[in-house]
Image 1: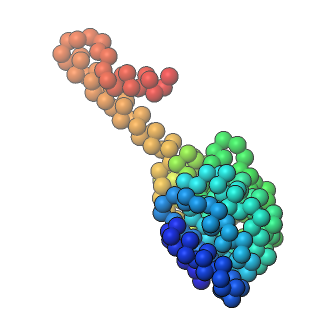
Image 2: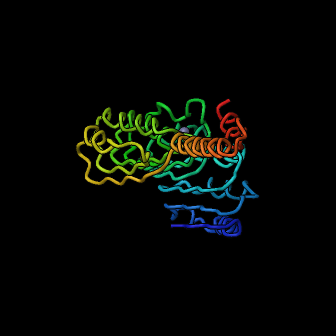
Image 3: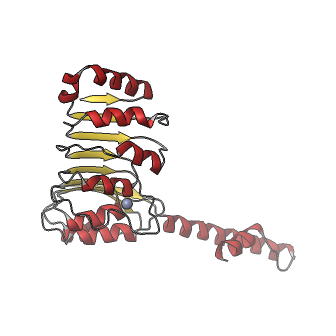
Length: 256
Ligand SMILES: [Zn+2]
């Protein structure tokens, strides 16, 4: 297993690959997890192209542009790859998957296709058994593939309906889901009932409470309403008649 955490690690490792063919064939599990931007995509790309025997690939590279990801993975072929963990954009992942149909374990970063359909929607991966990623993207993969382990999280831009859709999709799978990890909205009171109906063969369940943007907005509106009413009460007491408070302005601005 090779684990690289910095650009310097990558440079040193690729230099080793250039002189040690035995290392090239020995590496089965390759992990690059960076905290900083990657300045030289070409060095890592050179390393990846040499590692033809990979079974596991993890690429977590912050703030890399789609063009950088495309350049990095262009012509990368790993005939034995069955694990992919990456924060690459989903359209890049989708293209990569066409040449890697053996993927069984996949973990995805956030989806930038917020308003349009995710590039992974409807993708068939006959070996896929373990998936983690944004609930919206995971839902479509669960429906299409023999997934038995799911970990799905809710993006701040997603509402609770995304989780509802995912739970519905669980009932459509052709295999028994056994492990489920899910973000759930604090206002979703019958989630356990729906999960037990959709996935009766579960042996492991982990639910993490999150507050959706909708719920936060509801709380925000309640606070504004309270402030508005409170300022009106003060205005009446002081005999000012109609008072346009800060709360009023914010409330009107928010609704308009
Ligand atoms: Zn997606």
